[in-house]
Image (cartoon, rainbow, N blue to C red):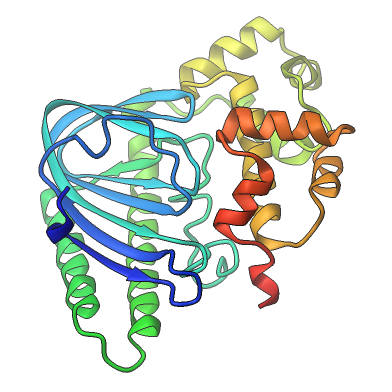
Length: 293
């Protein structure tokens, strides 16, 4: 990436990145672990490789769209030289949690612990997204009245279209990738984690609840989700912790207790292990209590 290829909008209140678009023609920018304090959307136009995200690894090919939340770890290893375009935006610029009713992308594009953080699109669909990004770039170079508000509106439309595309493609993708429907036991596991992740942190708790042996549940979970049950529980806890840290002004001790941790320091270690940043630093760099401002 060169400075000339990047267009950046800076938050005038703190001087930090608000919104950025840049092109890349090699893998240098992503060949090491990324843990960024803003949302990232990456379009792979050409090339192939391996995407490592959270606890899993995925095959990557041309015409792929990748979506990452703040501090979600990822890196790309190229097999064939990749080129594409990337878009970054800070939650101060647009917070998907706060605007969930306007753009239903949370749990579809971002923060879905059961699906890969990417979608494969057709060449025509990719060209459509590139055209829309071109409009965003054009607006960034034309700082007229209400530029900020227009960019936010254009980003919202981009996210809505991407969410629709992934939602419409999801059933076909599932059948293609798995060869069969998701086992009923995994639907029960997902429901159980969603209802009990605050109080049940051990895989054995879930196998007992679902009346299946820990070994059998672990095997089927790894096969279908490419993750362990421990991974799924940890990711779900971290997603909620991040939401609380940048949407509320709750004390970290209170957030820890609400998530089933009796010891604030143990929670902080757990968070740092999984997010590679302390809860306080996450709050400081991503922002907090934005819903109240």
